[in-house]
Image (cartoon, rainbow over all chains, first blue to last red; front, top):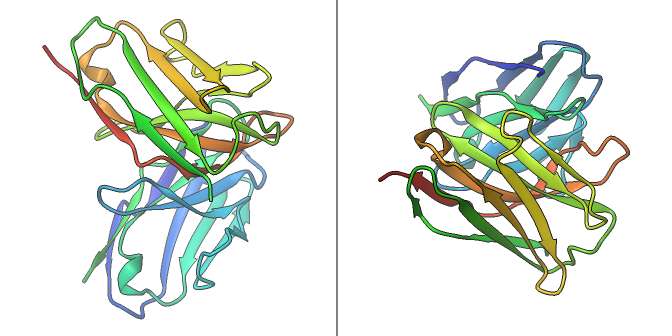
Length: 107
Length: 123
């Protein structure tokens, strides 16, 4: 199985900060990498698919980049509603696997 | 707007079988553009894809759980279901039903997700 490693596992930030989360795959996955946001007690919500394509309705403050093994999710200016846990997921080969998440907390 | 809603028991005894159903509203399970899947989330293990199914009948299962899983679709009720046998405490998790975009590989992102159903395996 492809292992997905996210870093950091958690971070503290303030409203207005620029935040970057990294996801690394154990082997090349092209651009078959997707990002989700999960708030406590809620289901994950798709933010970005195929590494950099913004899902409809997601604020443009979110962006994704990368290809191969290294990927980044960036929030350009953190808002109160962005404090949540973020997961990456690969769909290059079965089984589709997820990172363990990055929790973004209020400093 | 497509909505998914899981239903099933909250508590199941060890060695028994878990049966979960996902009711789809705002869209049809018959659409060949999509597939239907189950994902679970346990506190330590994190998010784990369990199984996927197309309306055509094509299925795929997580090998780690293979032999214990059955996934099926009931188009007349616009539902799909998961059966997981021989439960242990390790199967305790929140179970989500999700939709995936169809592709040649059968692999893709998941959107939307149901709200989730907490399943606890305990005697």
